[in-house]
Length: 243
Ligand SMILES: [Zn+2]
Ligand SMILES: [Zn+2]
Image: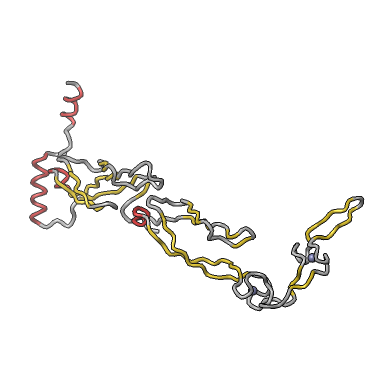
């Protein structure tokens, strides 16, 4: 499933192969209407006595498997097995917040046995997202910001999994700066811990293919900023350090 599906939780229809009691013979394995005959191996007792030295042990009859009766004519549908292979289709509700290797148990959708149907276990796989990287309940993303916006300050619209939010870019934001957006991460699959956070890392987008005028302006700005291009000069750093 996708990260969006994992965020919201979904109903998914799944198909899988399974055995079911043969409908034609009602799971008995005997051709419809034919009688069962008494097992000749155990004389209908369902048990046979095995002698082993001094010991005599009663064991389940291998021929009739303890029923005391054998099928005279096998059901043509299931060849006497009493089971048929089917493709089962079930709609499964997958809760919000599931992660890779989350395990989901669906009661009564497993193979048929003597005590009814077993359970079906689903292992969840969440696909990688092109924008968000998941770390438990938290999400991480890179946000390209223009040089001008990072220097002057401004806003960026971000489409999170929940909503569209406007993030403030403070004046003088450096490349690599991480902003935390509370509650914009993944929900807790058990519901107890609310939502994780979204960490947005600012990546400075350096302009390329400048036209002549843009180049002139950039050069003018560069001269104006001095040779350090806006970084605090070494002199200023010393001044601060020894104040
Ligand atoms: Zn059958
Ligand atoms: Zn028997």
